[in-house]
Image (cartoon, rainbow, N blue to C red; front, side):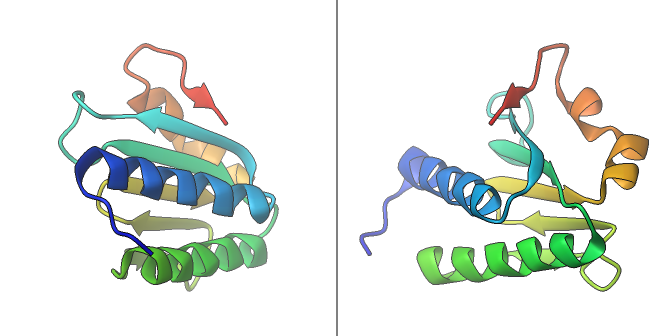
Length: 120
């Protein structure tokens, strides 16, 4: 694989995240662009799984794909309980939730900056 730099690698990482979640049948996947709005990342992706088992599986597969494709291991938090799993891949931060937990925290509203978050 040819590694790209800068904006190309950010877009490639974002595309990999979105494709992986789509392949694993994530529910209500939302991508929030943060570039120019926050220094923590260029994208925040929020998605749900139907159960803790699905959330854990999606998180594990995504972390493996990021490591295989980009040669770096993302930080993963919350995997043991899998109610809310955070995957910090650097330029893309992914939040995977069970639906009830996602509704409670409502991250999309907090990070949308008054705009409509982009549906994938």
